[in-house]
Image (cartoon, rainbow, N blue to C red):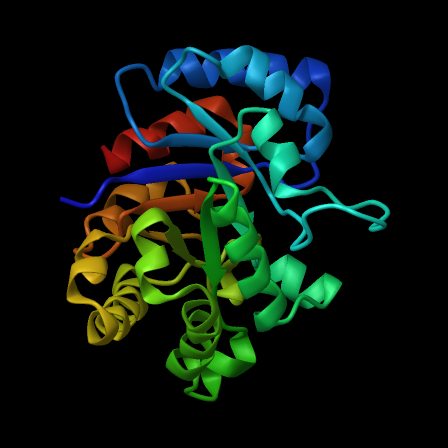
Length: 248
């Protein structure tokens, strides 16, 4: 049985006061559930550690450097995230790829850096609207996945999470239909199974892209969708907890 995970990606949002209220509501509203994760901006990781330690809610970061240490001004290493009790880190989000120019090889190096420090990477894969309309979704997500598997090895995915996020559905209000999402999740799992059937049966594959309480249950009912990577709805405790319950 694959574990179900719902991870909130706060992106560049939050304040000490807002976060404090949100975290208290998330802890209370998701009581009794497992696989609940909050990923905040770097400056607030100390707050997540303070508020979530000893609860059922895990926490993580939204990115990290592929380098261990050195003259990399503005970067944050995996070891620094571990210092703040992080269990997870999001790797290769489409915004990192599109806005900040991260290549598939850079993403692969970050994935490996995370695992080398004991973090669980949440590897994001996804296609743009133009790529979907061109009929190359499977080729795009396959290349993104293969870059990481080629560097880290397929067995690395025994301690990893994959998140399929169609770029055209992130923050747009548009959502892949449950069947569209399932088709890509199935393709990814089949691709992994060619390398290792055992890993394919274990690795959680999450869906991300305008997931809301109204559509979460239908998405999560698909056989290869194991939860969600949640953006905007993760900033509203009631909505996020409802999504978490839909995955339980």
